[in-house]
Image (cartoon, rainbow, N blue to C red; front, top):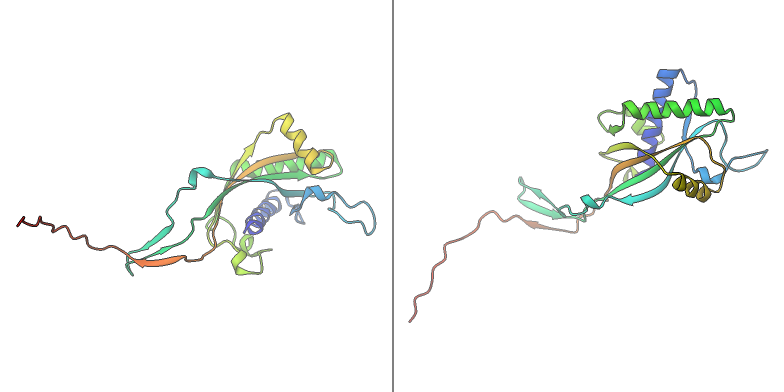
Length: 209
């Protein structure tokens, strides 16, 4: 589900770059920036001159943790009990790895501009091809419904230092965004029972003998 959500964002961002800036090839990819860059024939790693989207941290949204663990069906008069979904916030990193520093800043500014005018994504406002392109093979890994909200994160110099030290590489032009809220839920019914449809309140005291 996580990879599907990020693939949707990558596809939407590439569509924006193609329409607004006539990009002939995809400019944004999913990639772990900590892998480093390939520097020779047969070398492993990422290729340069791309914008890479990586996840650098995951946090649970605790304010939405206390949700009901049942679903009420008024048609069948049944209630199904399931574990509630997990609501998560993802710290996402957009890294512009162009060898020309001017182009790196140019591409990063286009990414920021994209999220400036559009920061909310759901199944109704994204292109159908963005959902299907590079989607997981297994249906259980795909998002059925989703709402992804992106907010830019202003990191301190200390946080930036820790971030790139953890990634083990030199610092590139980058932007941090918090992606919220992806609710991860596997459809597994724990139990099922009938609904209470009537409450009998006809009580009386038994007379003393």
